[in-house]
Amino acid sequence: MSLHRAAPLRRPFFTPGVFVLLGLLGVGLAFAAARFALGLGAVTHLSDQYPWGIWIAIDVATGVALAAGGFTTAALVHIGHRNRYQTLVRPALLTALLGYTFVVLGLLVDLGRYYNVWHPIMPSMWSGHSVLFEVGMCVMAYLTVLYIEFLPIVVERFRGRVSLPGFLRALDAPVEAVLRRLDRTLGRVLWVFIILGVVLSTLHQSSLGALMVLSRSKMSPLWWTPILPLLFLLSAIAVGYAMVIFESLIASRSFRKPPETAALSGMARFLPLLLFIYLSAKVIDLAVRGAAHHLLDGGAAPLLFVLEIGAGVVAPLLMLLSVQVRRSPSLLLATSALVIFGVVLNRINVFLVAYSPLYASRPYLPSIGEIAVTVGLVSGLVLAYRWLVIMLPILPAEADASTGGSVAGGADRGARAPT
Image (tube, rainbow, N blue to C red):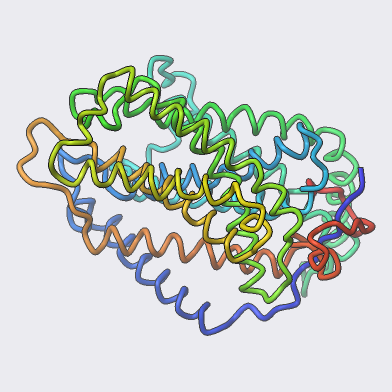
């Protein structure tokens, strides 16, 4: 298998945009500190009737879906042997790694007893009847797998270049020995973790939908369905590819690199089929359950449902049938953004709009503190992404990117990371 050459970006970290993101991150951290010091009630509008809000709907449920590019791209390249997309695997892996890491951070802020988050790893506290237990275990396991898959990139960057400062220089030789050992062993066992990552992802992506199956009496029939796990999995697979396209194009514009048009255009060919399968499942489900007449109900729910399907599924599906759209970076960016918008709105609709507690005394609206923490988490994710692509060989080298990732170069010295 030929490897596409990746290299750290030669870009400064600090820019005016970075300072804005640092400010947003600081505000979010301040509200998060207030939440931990004073409790959920001091910062959020959560209550016994509304035990979850945007921290679950956006930070967790949406975040997990948008991080699906890691397992979908790994399945496409390493299991499906579509080697032309190798150049997209490392950025997809990084996006998934950061996405799941910040999902866990968002979950810690949301949990009332966050200090007990370690309980699921204790066999004495396992519950085989709990969907949430399965989600927690899969997310923890998959996050561990992601860090193992990311290790070869770190080894490639630092093997043969270890030079610690000051008195730490005495550790140069031991660290170099560890890197050499990792270089020899990771390539032999990495395929196991790639397959494990795909399996774990399909489990918890679907199980997040299963959580809301339990709330039938509290949900709008437009969104409640016994096949919610299947719908969550299908939408995650579709948005995984859309997120890879979106992230690659945004990174190209941000870092002033030529877009990987050939690889992205090829990946975009899968999206119409995936969106059609998801749309078909939604339509058939509404028909079988006899719930389509609820689209004529008053209120915001039917309008949001139509917006979710129309703008987030039908519009990009039709657009991506055009070869001209798939070959245009600007139109690809727009269509992938529509798919992402549709999945984000779907998770918000399922967890917030469709949810109606039996004894609610007031509607839920997120507080300033909840919004600030969510914006801060997103800002921190973007900052971490920028820092890591500057430090590590993740994005294609300039010569590779200019040809759409079609130029195969020799691997940088060190471990062969997923490419």
